[in-house]
Amino acid sequence: MKIAIIGAQGVGKTTLAQQINKDYPEIKILPEAARLAQKEGYKLDHTATVETELWLINKQIELESTEDNWVADRCGIDLFAYIQHLFSHEKSLIEFANKTLVPKFKNYDLVIYLPSGEFAIEDDGLRTTDVKFQKEIDDQIKNILEEHKIEFVRIVGTPDERLEKVKEMLN
Image 1 (cartoon, rainbow, N blue to C red):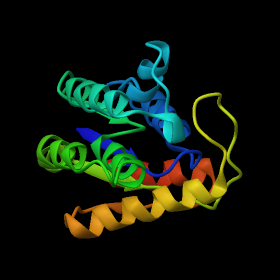
Image 2: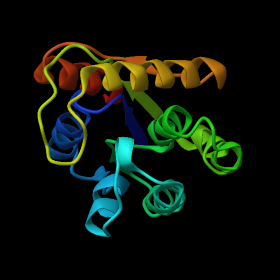
Image 3: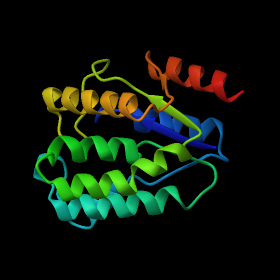
């Protein structure tokens, strides 16, 4: 089972991934490529470079190829949304992301979309807390879901309500 939890920064993806892993320990949590990039010294969000995005694409594909049962609080869909938003002027990067990430979208068994605006963005030291930027990324994600006809489940509610909805799907 490959579960991709998607959404902009600060919508509760990590919380839900951790809850799923706690209740289903056989479903491992994939490391987040962005956190790994930060540890390597790459800048993220508004300060990211093409080099950062190329590193992230390769790392994301590597991570998603390592396990059979995983839940990811970031996946290729999110990454593609950030790339399209931040680097729309970099046609070669968009083309590369399209060729490498988009074919991987079909590998997800379950895509869970968490919309923005339900919670205040907590400062985790990694992502921006800019609500306008969050909404722009959320719009990009929705456009990708529609454009690539990706089946997904939209989940809202408190963290516990969200987990209950996931449990219903998994049982």
